[in-house]
Amino acid sequence: MDWHGWVTLGAIVLMAAALLRNLAGPDVILLGTLALLTTVGVIDPVEAVGGFDNEGLITVAAMFIVVAGLSATGGMRLITAPLLGRPRSTLDAQIRLMLPVAAMSAILNNTPIVAMFMPVVNDWCKKSGISPSKLFIPLSYASILGGTCTLIGTSTNLVVNGLLLDVYGDSAALGLFTIAYVGLPAAAVGIVYCLVFGRRLLPDRHSVTAAGEDLRQYTVEMIVEPNGPLVTQTIEGAGLRHLPGLYLAEIERDGEVLAAVGPDEKLEALDRLVFVGIVESVVDLRKMRGLFPATNQVDKLGTQPVHRRLVEAVVSNRCPMVGKSIRAGQFRTTYNAAVIAVSRGGERLRVKIGDVVLQPGDTLLLEAGPDFAVRQRNSTNFYLVSALENSAPPRHERAWIALVILIAMILLASLEVMSMLGVVMAAAAAMVVTRCCSGSEVRRSPDWSVLLVIGASFGIGEAMEQSGAASFIAIGLMSLGGASAWTALVTIYAITMLFNACITNNAAAVLVFPIAQVTAETLGVGITPFAVALMFAGSNDFATPIGYQTNLMVYGPGGYRFGDYVRFGGPLNLLMLVIGVVLIPIFFPFHPLK
Image 1 (cartoon, rainbow, N blue to C red):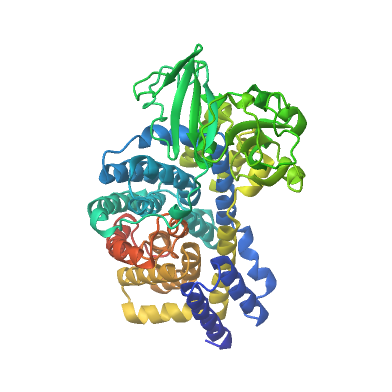
Image 2: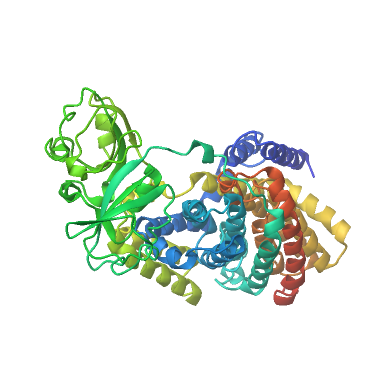
């Protein structure tokens, strides 16, 4: 091995150390490593950026758009609401959460699945009184375990399959459910482990952000939609009984006010529900199917619902609306924004929204077009104007369209009538064509840091292969494992698992792939068993928060510490290693090269 190989190995060591010490984001560190290898001449610029046109990376990007359509239409809530329900205990909550998340992660990329479930779980914890630290790690682990059951379940599987296509052609590509032979038993054992040992090994800790919870109390009125899904449901059954930071103050029905509403009270069409609570829950209430704002001013806004956002604005003493009611002052006509809720120093306002007489310091929750916050940010009419992220009203009427697209994508992928990239791209295009998600939502949907890490990893893997570093490591591993293919498989799995704990899942799989390739060729066997081992070892990291994107995502919301992952996830890592190296040779034998 010449100096190129030693420089490459040195760069890999520095990269791992920087990631371990969290000196910068993984995307910055890997791109910096790639830039270093390109600058010193280990690989040329074209080879360095060649990974960004990989089929697996593009498939992952397209999956984000599919999930964006499900989220924007409320299709995800149609799936999660009946599955989660109200748990009776922490164990019951973990079962209700892990089983559907694992199943959904098998057919959707697990990173956006966790992103969508995080606010659901957070609200769930508030409603049920369960510590978030008991559920967020199980959420991440369930998504990882479920993702290893199909080719599209995790970005690592797609990336490794993309490498197989690039190096060996279509004959080496894996089918949608090919890895399920190993994935399903591993997922079942992993979920049982979490349920059995979660009670003792998971901490009982609250989120680090809990202390900063918004204490502003809004008064908001909602109407039960005629012929909607909430009609004839009880308050408890409709999910309106234990809303986090929000309570149902009264119901107005046919001119009669029902105060102190009980959980068994049945909702009727056109009931006017008066809620009092924090802004986050008011936003969630606005997204609930079967409810719409009591004010008719929302329907008169010139902006299409898909382009609207919720905005908070504090009324100043110079606002011409001060001393006037919202209706009499023609607020919607003046500002092209509809008042959804009003907060006044924690006081409950006992008049209808349109009859509220505005005072300086009132905080208004408005539904407006995307340019409202920009137009009014420097206005003397408001002290503060702040747009709320992810607050566009869901397009509930298109939820079933998004679900049909999802089902069609799964069926086409399982029948293998076209490539995985073609299926996912078609589903993403369908989401846009059917207006399940808008162009702006498409642009916001991908997690660009994840995609940059994957693309940079391909370039670093290419440098390892061309510099001879991969061959050097492979020969060293072979000397340790002898000529046994099974021992080489164990070694490949272990080194990928260690890389995964130190860097990231996709980077670990891409960096070890050339080592596995050389090892298989040296032994004279096919690459498939080693590729499957890369998929499992590259995905199944539970021992560190940095080893997998979803582990890092739940780190803060769960109030975790680094040691929580080591204590609970370390044994699970070893358990998955044992299951993997036992089952992979059974279902994917070491066939000699032809």
